Image (cartoon, rainbow, N blue to C red; front, side):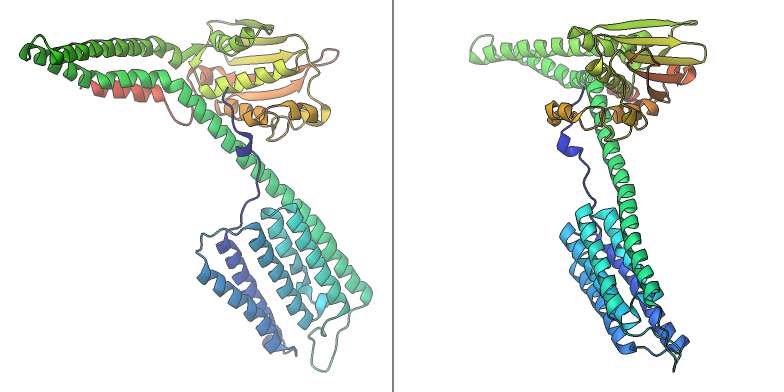
Length: 458
């Protein structure tokens, strides 16, 4: 199977696009301006209008400088993104200080920068921004200007109520930060795992096409090689039969004959293997994935039976890779034996892979097949060669994704007591298996090669 460098599969935090942050800040500026203007002119409440708009203007100037200095597609580093979000928290704290502190209902907007950080930055930076937001809220409890209210009247909320608002901001920051980070982290892991799956599928598809490409190259090179042979033959009739030039010409003709022989072998090899590469019987598919295990001396028992004629399906490199990956996982954990049972009926085709090992741990069983959920222990992951992508928890996810793309359903479970071991059951609708519904995303490469061969003779 194809090895994938581990450093290409590890999840990494996304970088915030500057344009996204700038647009969000313009939205915040518009909301702050509308709120201040509405309180001052709509409700007629007295408030430090000029100071409020001065604080808002700082955000406006910052946005304009960022827009002028950087292109819209620029992506912020972690330090820059953290600094800008910290600035937003401090700017909101200054505006709240002028308009009633935590008594202002807009105090809950402290959660917004923390939420953005949780979806795009590391947990450590999100924690720092959360502490900054809670610290600013604490300062606003102790010091702030009066809440704008009707002229000649004042509204002072009880300290206990303000403390409740502070507690709500604290709990909201913690809950929102953890929840948003978890959702974003799962999305990042899924994106990374799907990218790894595409890489595996592309490489397996490339390997399966090498013979066809060789045959196509042989057909393409046939015409120029025939021209070289014809010219060398004509020169043989024209030039002297003896001398250095004649010796070079004979050598050229010998090499042309040798190239013709090589191209003939390549062409015949592609034609002989073409039927196998296009369609394959269910039992042959099983033997193909079992053969590497038998080569190393592992005991793999194969059972094949069914109703009616054996189904024939398109050979899909993704399915071969997925089944091989599941079989590798079974042999890794089996005590002494792995059994593969291939069955078919008029309506279904299924393959069941069973081992006699300990099976999946209870905490793994419910999540097995998800990205970065590994069935190996920490010690086994340490011993595994991570340069080959081992121990990262992607093997079963990649296998599951590739197999399910073929129209099959994969179920991973444990054997019923008193038996032990894990069971992987793959079920296709028979019509999907026989019609080759599992064509890889790159399309039918053999059909393309056939067209190339046909065109090369025109």
